[in-house]
Image (tube, rainbow, N blue to C red; front, side, top):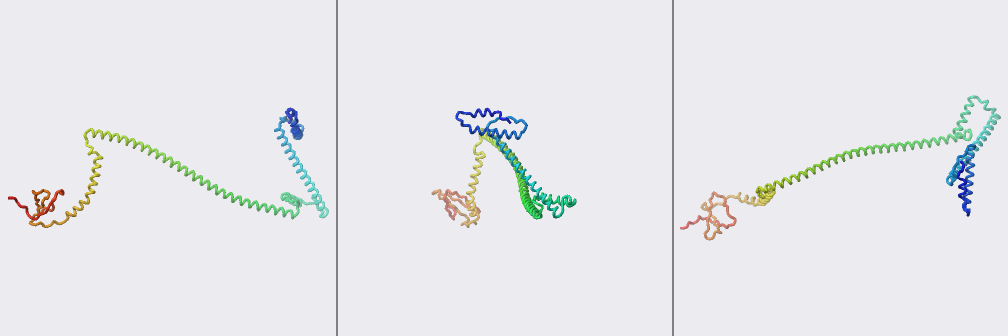
Length: 319
């Protein structure tokens, strides 16, 4: 990339007091480093143009720093690998020389079976990541892998238990969701039924109200018609009901008197002298009257507003 706006940026940073000299120097340094990094990246290819403002320069500068840091890390890692490879080669040469001197063994002198065993040993050491092929290193590596295996199995068992627990909770949640859905459907059906019932009751109530108004109009018309024909109010239903209530109240009040009168009527008759008895009306004054009572008559209906006196001799005749 080429900073197409670098000159304008440099021109814009000039002022009489030189307040932006430090900022301009920093921007120039960043642009130079960015240019070197871009040349390293693109090599012989043309660098695309870019606008050299503060934001673009900061982003490219950060990318350049990160890229160079990564390159340094990669270089160090490569150097370390190469150093280890050299060390392993030197150690291998030393061991080969030791085997050749002490046991007169070499790779070329080994049989195919021995070569295969040696390959297995080398592959095992590489898989176990041991520092060498000694028995102690293998034991240490095997123990470490066994411990990792036990830890992994324990973690797997724990994860299986958690999975079973979550499956159980999930099953319960699904069952609860199913039950809630069923209850919701039942509730919706019940609400629909209740709404239909309420609508029917509303229609029925409206019909009864209209019917009641119609009956009131008819009753009023019938009453007016009966009044016009000369019907007395005492013959109306309300008057008859009032009289019936009064009659029932009077019957209730006279019930004890009737009971007491019945007790007197059940008494036996008293004997009369000369088979006759008379009662004198005391309220008649000097001209009193006699009322004869025959023995065959058990009682005499008397007027309670008058006073009577009983006499046991027959009345005298005048003249």
